[in-house]
Length: 193
Image (tube, rainbow, N blue to C red; front, side):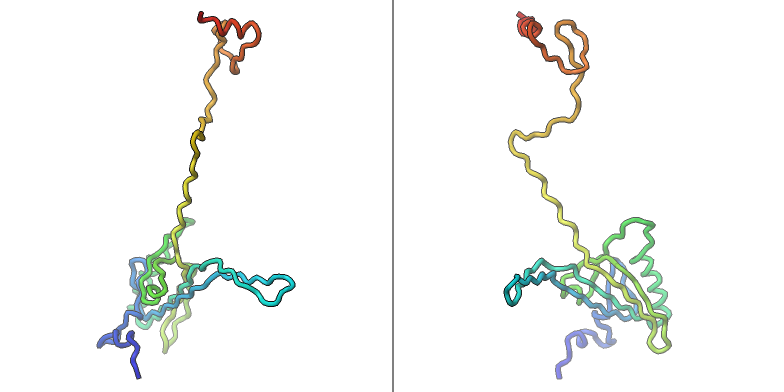
């Protein structure tokens, strides 16, 4: 019977990289199990009057990551209390920052960073320790929106109101733009000649 490589990689002390998880800059204590659920958004469409259906692939959903932390010793619990304060700090209404994640399962499924959705725990048991469940959602940075291209001659015009207009005949300031009419227009055109 073949032994899986993660058992062989554990070394003499039985410690495998699959039992550890780095979340942000914190290594979670205890024994760790990580599962990653990747799925696609599929739209099944049934045309009226026809048998069968066809599927439209609308892209991938964000991966859901579940981290199970098994705390067996008093030191595990103390280390977890310190880790908890770093990975899920009180933000007082501010947005939480995403955390980088490093675990073989996440690497395999292409998950590099996550946002924690919830943390839940069971009460400690005499024979099996205390289990904490950290539910995460994959974090991908929002793509930048492309800048709108402006065509030639479509330069933006300033929205400011032009300064005061002056009556060329009297030199007085006007509340609105001066548009000469009739004799005033003729005088205006030939005033410099």
